Length: 81
Image (cartoon, rainbow, N blue to C red):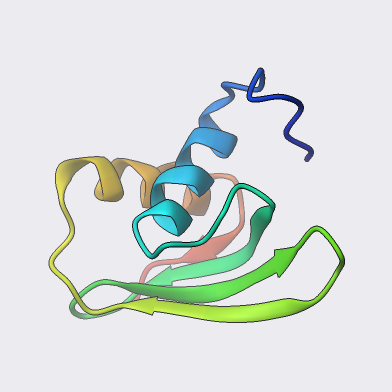
């Protein structure tokens, strides 16, 4: 999945932007896997150069983050804890 000049408004790309953006990651990052945790979420992402990173949030989910997780998990990128 690639983002081209911000034109891709697919639910998956929007969900990735919400989850990663809330943690301060830039637009050149994608999510490989994500899962809900007791208090938030965690997962593995990848930069456009192929290097992987982990991310985690222990903050209470807001409505937009909950939607984004539902989209990503529904597309097979993760699971509920």
